[in-house]
Length: 196
Image (cartoon, rainbow, N blue to C red; front, side, top):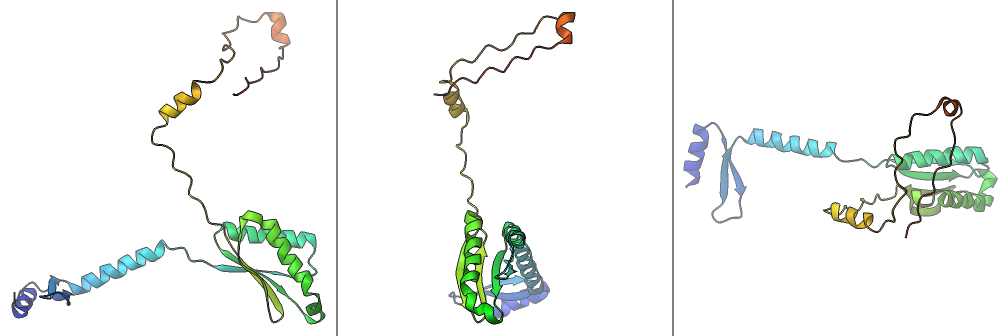
């Protein structure tokens, strides 16, 4: 079809002639409402953005003379931020003569790394920039749980077969006498059978 005929058909339908693949031989075109197409494409992009998680870097500031309780509180803030999926920047700001005691600051950040253990991933080890020492922590990557096998029934039968016989279930007890009703007897529960 010639381009002139395609434009004529598009105008009759009050639509647009849109070139889909200009490099093909012959070029491929489509008759559509181009404004509607752009709107739907923008709508899809907005919908995709809604499902994305923005990574936020939260900052927790320490001092070299931080007390234990304050340290614990700030460590709990770090754990909360990591639990929410945000990255954490732990900063120590040195003022004046504190610059001569940088080893204390490194010790606090190393203690934080040690205390968090596997609850955080260290993205950047403690590093000095001017009069601040900082470290960046990220939440640990969540491992997807292993998929269960397709059929659980055969596995249940296998695990049930080698078990040793258990004590017989209790039969319905006869009606208690008046003397026994006043004082219930307490017998220790039978220990579970050893597993092999």
